[in-house]
Length: 158
Image (cartoon, rainbow, N blue to C red; front, side):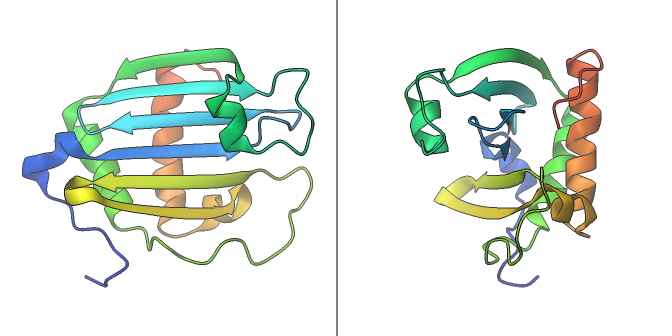
């Protein structure tokens, strides 16, 4: 296993967490935030910047200071599905350099964070189109979307 992969300890699966942010809260489509805990709890929210916030505001500030959540869904995944998703996440080559090309309008940026036991936190930032086509991230994104469609009764978040 290469150093940029994150080992998966199935005995500690409940301690893992995968977070995905897609888009920007100041963009027309807003920001979609997905969080999957190793316990199987999954939550998705669509967040927009409050009307008084300018386009120059940073995503972290908007989320911290109370972005407007316009839609949300949550549920619990079967443990086999959680293991499959966390296994896929553990195989992603994390800590790659950020996007190396300009956006293809109106393309969204994706920010991925994977927390493993022992404080091993890794991150990745890439354009949504590149994430969909990436051999490691693409299947992970597809699998997350499959479960989001189910818990959100068919609503497409990204």
